[in-house]
Length: 524
Image 1 (spheres, helix red, strand yellow):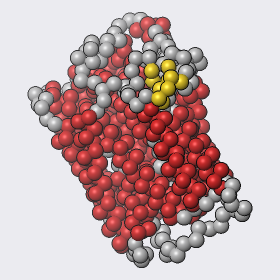
Image 2 (tube, one colour):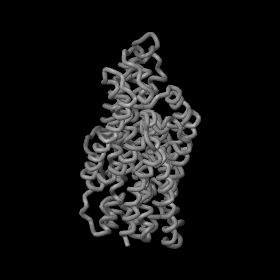
Image 3 (spheres, rainbow, N blue to C red):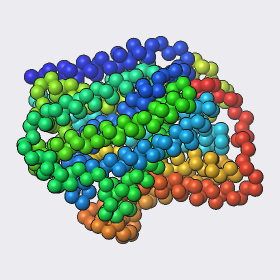
Image 4 (spheres, rainbow, N blue to C red):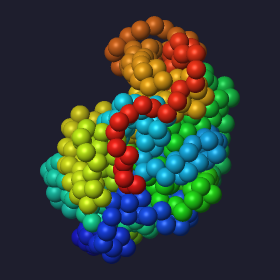
């Protein structure tokens, strides 16, 4: 009967791209391809933003976070991070979004180009491209995990992750290539509703399988603890201060300086609509996290807290949720829920990667302005190029993936190398009026180098949070790295200090960047 589940998944993988093509229609201009002519309703963009940032990392791994949580760090403390997300989005809505929408821009990094010059614009864009490539490669690999489990149940355990990620990559690129951002946004919204409905199905199924008294047992084990007020703030990612402040700055970076999200927000009709979409997405994400954390607690009760790898014999911790779906849900239900998990993954970043490449890089190296038809053609070419590169990176993650901490935490950690530098560059331009492009570029590069050192080398005592010293080996035993929510905040601070000090060399506020480049087209 598992063939029925596979059939539902196959129909989904074929049907969603075709629906995207139908919704997207024929793209007549680069403006239509990259920002949907700024005519998409705010509530659709809101759901698309949630879907874009959620990914399979959330659907698979957030339940694992609650499942593995210890009494010292309760199962719901992850929500402190989501609370910070809401605060960060409110700041972005009133500080950065008006600059983007009023400036009639297509990429977030075009703002840096207008403030400083094309050098920092291209630097920030290339950084975004590389970081997004790593994050989405991990995301695409995470999507392959439940499919691998399904194929094993069907007697095909030897199917390589590489083949799975290739199939997923093809499904993702089709509607991005033909339908543009309008197709991406609408398909995102539909897929978000699908995986939320799938989560509700799992809760109903679990409720009928759990023993009496499971809720009280979970309460006694602190599985519903919301705030962590006792853990060290430097080394514990879900300590209240760490999660709220770190989550706020992380959200400011990911939703104010990351083209994946900014592209969707620019598809609304005006500033007010984009603000509603962004703030609304934060509220939706908070309750979405709560939903999947609750599933994690229910799974803990169902499996009696056994270790996913040692007790249940799974390949890694994040196979826990898909294993329950496949082995415990009735046939048909399993396929529906797994399709929802895939829905969370097929939210495409290809349009954002393509638009940033064409706008912030290609047009800066060309000696003549591109026509609108050339921009549209380049956008589609780079959509295909990035799809191929992304698939390769996903396969590499499948080969070299570390099976320790939940994959969602690894995904958030990747952004820590550059997210603070990106957001810091924007704030540098807004706060320090005397800052020039050279100041911004130096501050940016120094921040990335320092953050690499902090993330890879600095170790803290797990119990007290005290700094132990420098060690380039992986954390083990009683030592841990700096908690990942602090990465963006520290990066912003370094960028502002370095850039601010360099700006003191200048006596007068910076004027418009001096450049002889031709004014870019609307979609450039």
